[in-house]
Amino acid sequence: MKAFKTQNPYTGEVEAEYDAWTKEEIDEAFERSYDAFLKYRETDIPTRCERLRNVASILKENRDEYAKLVVTEMGKTIKEARGEVDRCADYCEYYAKNAEELLKDDHVKTAAEESYITYQPIGPLMLVQPWNYPFWLAFKTVIPQLLVGNSVLVKNASNNPQCGAAMQKVYEEAGFEGVYQYAPIRSEDLELAVSHKYCRGGSLTGSTVAGKSFGEICGRYAKKCVLELGGSDPFIVLDDANLDKAADLGVKSRFKNNAQACTNAKRFIVHESVYDEYKQKVIDILSKMKVGDPMDEKTDLGPLAKENSIKALRHQIKDTVDKGGKIGYGDEAQLEGDIDASKGFFFTPVILEDIPEDSEAYREELFGPVLSFFKIKDDEEAIRLANDNQYGLGGAVHTADLERGKKFCLRVETGMMNVNSATGGSNVLPYGGIKNSGYGRESSVHGCREFVNIKTVQIFKA
Image (cartoon, rainbow, N blue to C red; front, side):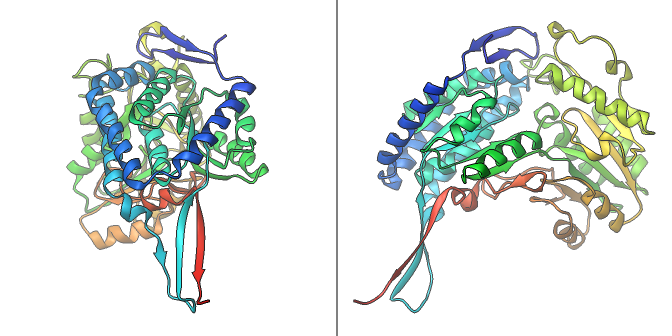
């Protein structure tokens, strides 16, 4: 049985299968990566930037091809898949344009004639990627590392092998042969990779369970790691919010990427004075969403990526209802019956209300089109509820009072907060969370400095 395969979420058909690397192939890959790193770290910054611009150009030239591949392996709509490819190209161009500022030394006045901090690449990295953004999340992790001079081995998810192979060709054509390698490694073989003498560190984007396991492996071998894990982002709607805007952005925040993003809005925390009106506005939008073929330009919501995603949502919803919660909107029939892969892994929107604290919807991340609604009386209760969760990735608050919004940003325990916007991050700002959402940062100067030797240099007179 092949370890990596493409199962089209819309048709259920297995369209491609790939073997995983053996132990010997993992060893050989790290040897290649280290040899490539020794040469690549000597390249000047303009050369690295030129290669990043090459990547961007290839992505733009083949945009539709890659977008269709993303749809085939993950099931998101073709509109969003094109946006994912575009975002990757923009990301490359940003780092190429701002390389000098991102990589500059920091000079500090001391008793020495000259003192500065310089940032040097450290070598091959093992980067583990999830299935929900086959291109974008890999690019978000990889590009800062290529800019600083590291080499990378990238393990895409087992259901994204064609995207992984496609990215390999992109980077090779752009001039990163050996420096970038697609690494079809089984999860159970990650310790072989991390423990390799040439592996200098690693990152994992994925579930908290997977992140804890990977972090334990990295710790065992004293390898630096970055973890970007799950989220249950609060979307807070206060009594003075623009309800039309908050409803529009709330639905967009929840349903981006077929409602399978770590920074989706998942917990809707709404002031009691506007709760009913806001919920109805959300329902009005949901009722007009077109669910269907992800390759159809008019489709708003495609299938979930995997059969297990449906099973997980069914369990979490049933658990919540059994413990006293209720379904405020949605098709309850989809919670029962056999799952027919040939009809697509579809799950239509559901709103949960009156959610008890001991339920899965209160404590866990729901990775799919389920909106958990909570009614609050005041700001303090909103903040308490937002923070009463194991995760701390992102969030948003909607209010006409910007100073009030800023206070929420400081008090809500997340790595990212937005006021009067959707949840989510930015290409040019640090991305990451706290608590069980992980540690470390991707993107911006902070992402560039996660896997470098932060070297102190002091120069004195002879």
